Image (cartoon, rainbow, N blue to C red; front, top):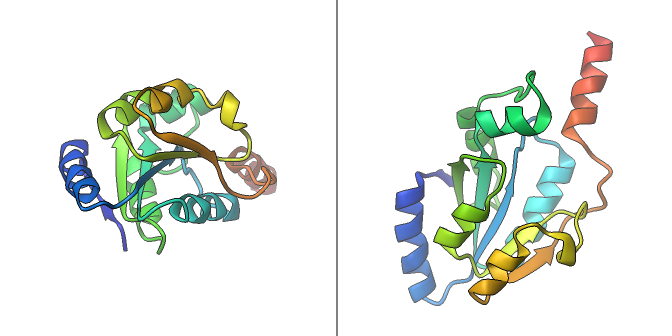
Length: 157
């Protein structure tokens, strides 16, 4: 099981892991109502290195990105669920809509995004490239959506 960790502790741990020669990978997202698309994305990200760190948007940023009725679950619960996945080593909750500030501080060897992006269209690509990291697209085709699940559940209620 992975560990939910504060950013300061994560930065120390990641530095030590990199000194050991381990490849640190970062994947990020809201992960509100975990579904198979999330699992496939995270498994794909884990395959890109030795240590998978997952950045989860905090509640305020999910509301800003997805609307006033989201998230469905609070960030601490979302983090705990993601950390329970076998492929995940660390989970950190980050503020703001973009993981760019976290990426700048963590400097993962690889930053993974889902197939709803192309490598060229990843907003954080320039941040990753600036320190020599790689941006990789992983996961299955974008056939799964938490927003669609929430809407479907609302129609069934």
